[in-house]
Length: 279
Image (tube, rainbow, N blue to C red; front, side, top):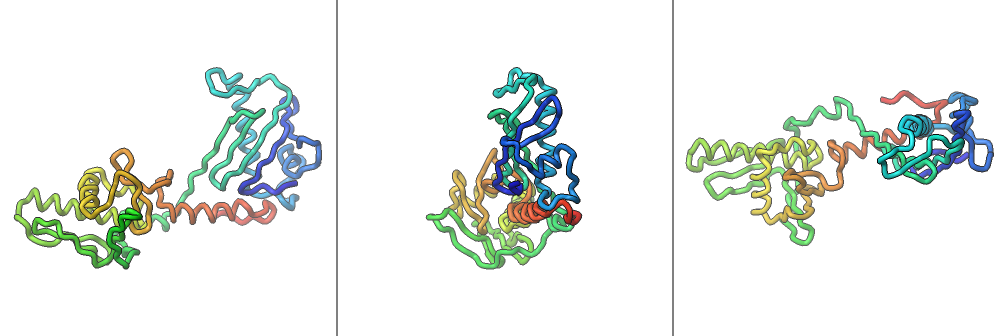
């Protein structure tokens, strides 16, 4: 049998009369025996966590075929009255798998990564910034670094100073309460932006009331926010009026997501007969 893992593509025949699976050429296969109830996980040398996902999703796919009939109104259709179905399973990554029935794409499964409370402990809290080396705006890469010690003069008697773990507003300006509040709000927004750019907070911590001021500040510093830009090595885009990490479809920072995904994939790849409990 071919071991299921990232990048694997495997095709089986499902018999609707018996509810059993088989290989296309009729050869022996541990996953087929496992699916059909003829082999237990502890007795298998090769089956792993990906095979559990695959079994559950094949069951789910066939329930969809039977439960939704001919899928009237869908872009694909599978006859629920057939005796045999060809099911192809593709494992794209630990969090994404795709399934087709008789050549029609039926199911794409996404499993969002989870983080422990310990891993999320610093979200929303002023923890030490990671970036220590300042870098001025580079027009070729549309990038810059915000770093500890940077000072930004707002030109109205106020300035922003990047401390070790938070951004502070300094100066006296006009002494107008409304201006004081706006400057303080900008400091809070810049604080969230730098923690986000340092991959310490999710982008959701950049509140909507701060975004326009931040975009204005970034524009004054040279950043073109109409296209992808980079802050502290994090690629960013403005979508729907919000600053987001480019290419990140999840809510968590990509470094935290990638670390969690790597650990999850390592756990999935462990043989079922010796797999340790997931932390």
